[in-house]
Image (tube, rainbow, N blue to C red; front, top):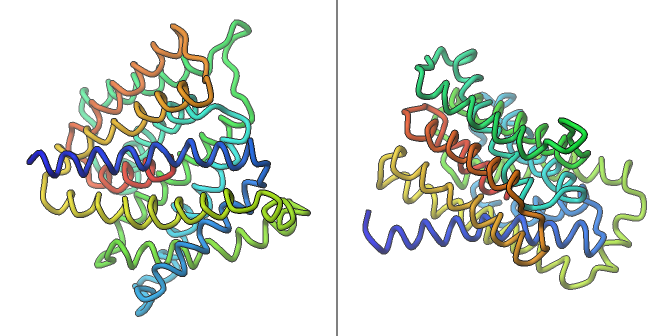
Amino acid sequence: MSLRDFGLLALVCLVWASNNIVSKYVVSHLGSPPLFYATARFAVVAIATLPWLLPMPRPRLRLITVALLMGGGNFALIFMGLKYATPSSVAVVSQLGVPITTLLSVMMLGETIHWRRALGIALTFAGVVAVMWSSAGLSASVGLVYVIASAVASSLGAVMMKQIEGVKPLQFQAWVGFASVWPLMLLSLVFEPGALQAGAAAGWPFLAAALYSGLVVSVGAHTGYYFLIGRYEANLISPLTLMTPLATIALGVAIFADPFGVRMAAGSGLALTGVLIIALRRNQVMPLLLAIRNRAQ
């Protein structure tokens, strides 16, 4: 990989990592309701990618289902998780998406798992358990339960996406934005009364965060990632995207003073080692899953 392309990948990973920090600030410190923030984000994505919306790829029902799983469902759950959990813990627990995708690939696509990927799956789960462990035993905060649900949604969407052919990245982004904004808007109206007033009270920082998340993170970084996937083997690109959770942890500690003791360090190390082992093995959906998982961070 050339130095220029490595620099582009590092920038993409840093942008993805910064989104966790920005989103945490919006939903926790600005007090913006998570579903409303997700609605604003996908409204930005839908408007920015509108020229790529038509013609609609087929099969249409599967496309909409995948868009909802990997878009509105995934991001809304991540934002809800960030309201109650630290960016560092979210970055680690969200790595569950990688082994879950691998297991779903076996069930739905007929892939096989050999002992190395089985070891990676075990290490990832062990690392996440270590992060969630407390003196009282294994426990998950409300925020981390949302993050686990997000990992399941994005994993299922990634596997189903493999069964759709001929959809270009920006075209897929257009349908993710368009399909997600309407149900998120409805859910926000029902479950987040006063959300519009809260967003207005947050002012320009809320608007800036939505624009950054929609344009820079979803459209810009996503396009850069797929440019690199087109030039290099996925087995080279995918492991390097682990810069994203590492950067998220570092930013969380530096900006929000996230606790990072021995248990968190050991759990992070185990989980990321497991993901690295899985990513180094050939997998049909790993590049797509890593893109979605990182973009959510």
